[in-house]
Image (tube, rainbow, N blue to C red; front, side):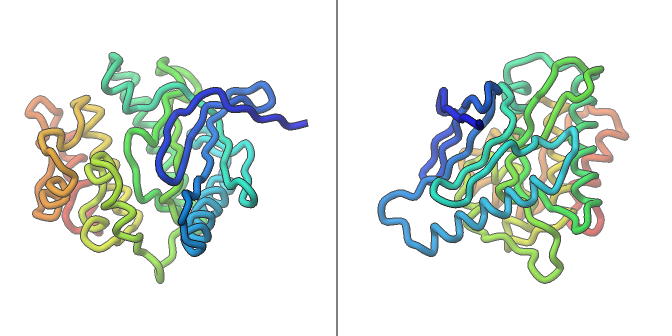
Length: 258
């Protein structure tokens, strides 16, 4: 018989709580939707539909670098149960030493996952990629897997007739979400496989510098303005030329040039 218990709160927002839990004696992460008093029925329907989309996309795939779904509910208490991992790339970049073999292995695993998603039928666009979307499975570069992606809440299947995200969903997010967004998403909500490529450029930059993108800016609105003006993060002069050129190609202003 399946059993699920919560042990601690990992993340708590207005509309969602993420817990660390135990499911059939295995450590898991549990995402549970919340509907505060006064939430309109249409909002409940939209939030549940977004979770349903997230579940459907994640359940489509069996890939070693994508966190698998263990269980889900879309009825009384909408929620999602996945594998649990202690650290994300965000905490690794800030708190731990990462030698180049590990950095390159993490990059390989993430690119492997994105290649898989972008070549699926239909392709999947991740849309809102950032270091908290990457869990570190192992610190050993020779391990079977070192990194996996999760949090498909903003992901969507490619649809040529519907390539917009609700702008406020990005704009109202935290500083980090805007800092990792492609300019066209901030401009009018346009998403594409190429907007994911822009994110990969920022990942390349972050793995090289171990710094937070646009940290010198105080507000998300300032980062948004900078990106829309065509500004890009400064690539250190110590960065190898081929690595630097790859970052620049990912950051091309015209998505089709990435």
